[in-house]
Structure formats: structure tokens, C-alpha cells
Image (cartoon, rainbow, N blue to C red):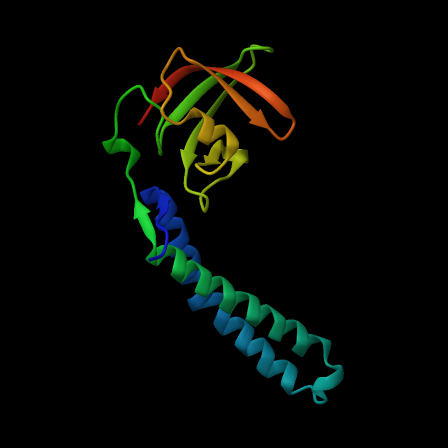
Length: 158
């Protein structure tokens, strides 16, 4: 049995939209590009043809990956969760005990993680260390840059 992939409803919608765009826009365009490049003659030295074929392969592979991921999706709606313990979907506000620097993250599925917008993967060392802990607790995390200690300031599921 395939392992389930946890994701939020928003993450599932983003992946479905990416798959729709790949199937309806990108793939037909690259097929057109391949046809155009074929018309230019000798394919053995036709860089446009080879580039388009490579792009087609990458698009088909991404579509296949998205289909597999979505078929294994376990959609968890954080707005239906509550409590003070950190779990999937939680928005967590942390303070670095050593620097007093505060950071906020939402714990999401691996396909949704995007540090630039504050979403970390449930598979990340930080998320794994936080799971099951509550507001007020200190959590020691072995990060790639070395150990850190965080205090959990807030947990919400909005």
C-alpha cells in the first residue's frame, strides 16, 4: 500500500491547478513546438527539437508525479482542528531561546512547504521536533546548522 501524503485543502487545490495547467497549456504548447522544430529539417542537429522533446519529457514526468501524489493525498483541513498541541496544519509561533527571535510557521505536507511564505514540511526536523508539544514548552531541535532551543508561544488552527 502506498504511503499517504498529508496536505491541506489549499495545497491539494494548488497541485490540481498545476496539473491542469501542465495538461491544458504547457503540454499542447510543447507538442506544437516539437512540430515546428520538425519542420526545420534535420533533427540530429536541431537544438530546438531536442530542447522541446526534453521539456515534453519533464512535463509528462511532472504530470505523472502529481497524479500519483494526488491519488495518495490525505487532505486534512486545519480549520477543523483545535487544541494547544502542535499537529499537522498548526500555525506555530516560536521564540528562539538564545536570541529571542520570533518566527511563525505553518506545518504542512511536503508538497506544500515553502519557507518564503512560512510553510514548513511535516517531515522537516523542526516540525518533527514540535509535534505533540504545547504552548509554553521548550523544544530542542537538532538543525543542520546545529542545535536550537525554541519556546512555543502560540498554536492556532485558523
